[in-house]
Picture 1 (tube, rainbow, N blue to C red):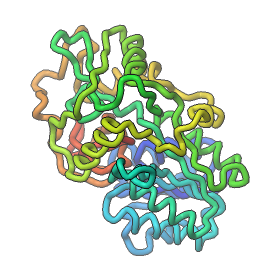
Picture 2 (tube, helix red, strand yellow):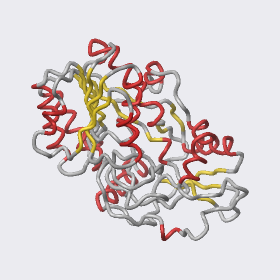
Picture 3 (cartoon, helix red, strand yellow):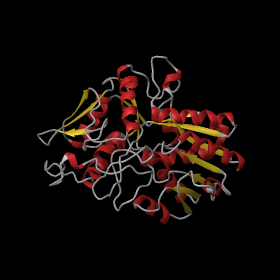
Amino acid sequence: MTGRIVVTINSTGRQAASFIRVASAVGWHVRAQVRSKDGLVAEELAALPNVTLFEGPLEQTGLIEDLFQGAELAFINTTHWGDEVCVGRAIADVAKRSRIKHFIYSSMPDHSIYSSDWKALPLWANKFTIENYVRQIGLPATFIYCGIYNNNFTSLPYPLFRMELQPDRKSFVWKAPFSPDEPLPWLDAEHDVGPAILQIFKQGVRRWGGHRIPLAFEKLTPTEVCALFSRALSLPVTYQRGPIDILVPVPPGYREHLDILEETLGQKGAPYFGPELDRPSYPAEAVDLWQGCRGIEEYAREVFPVEEAANGLRWMEDGAGVEEGKGEEDWGRGEELGEGGSGEGRPVTPGEVDGSARMGTKGTESQGFFVGNC
C-alpha cells in the first residue's frame, strides 16, 4: 500500500485536509486541488511530504485531467461553489477514463425521495445526484455520509450550532430545531475522517464497493450533547428547542438550506441520514474502521476552548467574555470566498470549508462563513 497515488479536491476543507495529513504520514502521494495556496491550511499541506498542490478552480480547463494523471485512488468531496453537479460529473468522467481503482465520494441524502412530505435539503441533494451518476457510469466507488461536525459549535452568533454564552458568563444555551430526545450522528471531521478514509481504501472495493457508510462515531441526542459539554467545561450547558436564529448575514443558498432543514429534520423529524442509513450498525460501522475517534466530550474539553480563544473569545478566562472591542455586529463581515480562502489566520469555527461561504473570524480578512455538515 505504501506509495499509492490519491487525488483530493477542495483540499483545505476539514474532510480532505484530515485525509491528506494521514495519507502523507503513511507515505502515500497526494495530488491535492486547492482554490488558493494562500492561508495556513494550504501552507501546512504544501509542507507535508509527498503532497503536490494544484491551484485553481475545478472549472479551469485541463485542471481535473492534470490532477488525475497517474493516480489510482480518489477521495472526492464536492462543494456547491459554481455548478456542483456539473463539476461532480466531470470529476467522475475523468476518474473513469483514468481507470481509478477506488473512488470514495462524500455524499449526503436527498430526503425528498423517501417521502412527499419531506423536502430536499439544497446543499445535500446535489451530492446525492452526483452519487447516482457515479453509480451509473460504473466507477468502483464507496460513499461516505458524514455526521454533524463537532467543530460546528461556537459561541459566536452563527446559526444552528451556537453555544450562546449567557449574561452570567458562566453558562451556555444551545438552541436548535431538533427534538431534544432524538439521536443525531456526530463526527470530529478534522480528527477522524482521515483515518477512516484510509481504512476504507486499505480494505478496498471488495469490502466496500457500492456501499454507503454513515461516518459518525457517536449517536447522541441534543440533551446528551449538552450534558457532555457541561461535564467537559464544568459549566451548565442546556438545550432549548426552537427556530434557527439568523443574527448575521448568510449566503442566500444557506438560508434556504437552514429553512428546509428546520422543517424537514426539525418539525417533521426526518432521520438525518435518511431512512436507509438510520440503522443499528451506526456508529459501530465507523468505529470498526477507526477506534481512535475523538468524541463530543473530549472535543468540548480539549478543543472547543482553544477554538474559542482563537476567535477572540475569553469566557474561559474567569468569564471575561468576548475580546474587548469586538461586538456581535463585527462577526459575519466578509465577502463570500471559495474553498481555501485567503488571509493570515486559520478560521476555526464553525465547521467546514467544504460548504459554501464563510464569515470573517479574528485574524482573517474576508475569510467568509463556514457551512459544515448541517
